[in-house]
Length: 129
Ligand code: 5GP
Image (cartoon, rainbow, N blue to C red; front, side, top):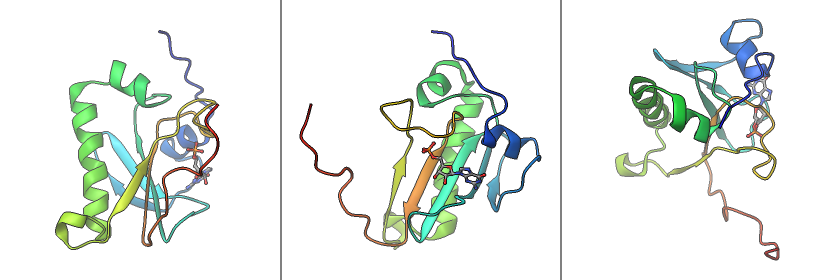
């Protein structure tokens, strides 16, 4: 399936240095920064440096090196933030919204790392349709 990547999206602009971000971590293939509108005491976004629209695009077309680096970057951010449950932290949630049903706002793959409080249920209870 062809993936149509919009090079004007806000995260592409952050990667090009056209707009600032509050950087948390940078690796060879990933960048982590604070969300501009945090929805929890900890709200960090981790994006790959490559031009990938969403998680399935990344899984299909990223190199093994990119996938390994990105995955480890997510883990390193969690560790640096002190939220890893295996290391005395209180835990966290990862979210990767994709497409219309996932209500994805920015069309560049990003994982939200949310924590710093008990986050409640994963989804609001609504009737299945
Ligand atoms: P999505 O709904 O696509 O999963 O999430 C996009 C996220 O990007 C939102 O949580 C939103 O607050 C964040 N965001 C949008 N524009 C900017 C920006 O310019 N800088 C930062 N740091 N975050 C942004």
